[in-house]
Length: 338
Image (cartoon, rainbow, N blue to C red; front, side):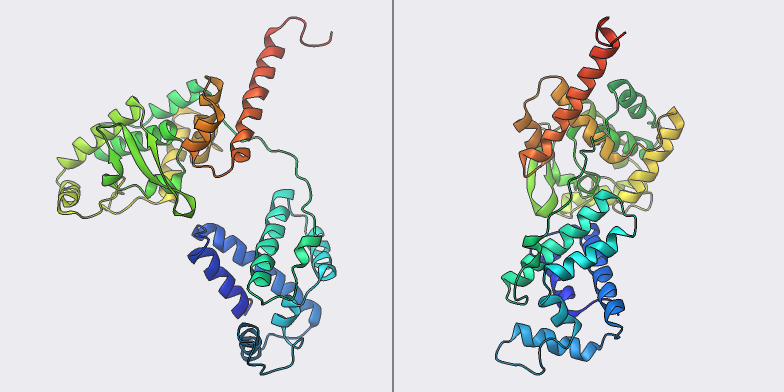
C-alpha cells in the first residue's frame, strides 16, 4: 500500500473542492505515493494500515488520541520539517528528472502541506521554507497559418466521420479551446444564431467563445449529414427530447474521447506531411499566437483561452516577439554581424 488515509483525503479535496481534472489529480497522487515510498524506505518499516487509520483519526478528532503521536508514517509526514523535505528533494535530484517534473513534484508537496496545515492535520507548513528552482521559460509551440490550412483541409467530407473530424479541427483552431473542453461539448452548447459556443473549462468555470465562419460551416455540414444518417440520426434526434447529446460522437455513437482526437490528428498529420509532434494543444497555442500577431489585445486572448491569470497568457507575447525577431534577422541586411 502506497497511499494513506490522509493522502486519500487530500485526493478527494483536489477533485471535489478544487475541481482538478482526473489527469492532474492522478499526477498529484503519484507524486505523493513516491514521497510515501521514500519515507518507508528510509524508515525500513512497512506500513501498518490500521495504525495509519488511527493516526489520521487522531488528527481529525482532537478529542480522541488512540495512540502516541510520532509513531506512524502519517505522523512523520504531518510533523515533518523543512529538513525532511530537503532530504527528499535531494533524493529526487538524483533521479535525473526534468526541471518541469521536479517543479510539479514540489508543487504537489506545496499544495498538500498547505491543505494539511490549514485543516489542522500538520503542525506546520514546511514548504514555506522551500524554494521552487527557477525554470527556463519554454515557449509554447505554434504552427504557421499555412500549416494550419493544410491540416484543416486533410479530412474528407464524404462521410459523417470525415465531416466530424473537419468540424473538430476547425473548432479547435477557431476557438482555442482545450481538447478536454472539445470532447465535453454537447449539442445544446452551440449557439448557431449568435455564432458562439458555451464551454465548460478547468475548475468547472464556464465561458462563451465565438465561432469563426469556417468552424461554424464545418459544424453545420457535420450536423446536417449526421441527422440524415441511419446510424447517427436516431441518436441525434434525442436532443429534441431534452437528452444531452454529445456534439462529437465516435463511430459507436458515444462521446468521443480526448485520446481519440489525438489519434485522428496523428492520422491527418501523417497524411499531409506535417510534424507528428503537433498536438491538439498546438492548435490552442497557434490560435493565441495568431490572434496576438494580428493585433488582438492580451486581455481578450486571456478571456478566450479561459486563463485565470494574465501572466499565463503573456507567454504568447514572448512567442510573437520571437517570431518578429526571427523575421527581422532573416530580412534585414544589417541584422546579423558580418
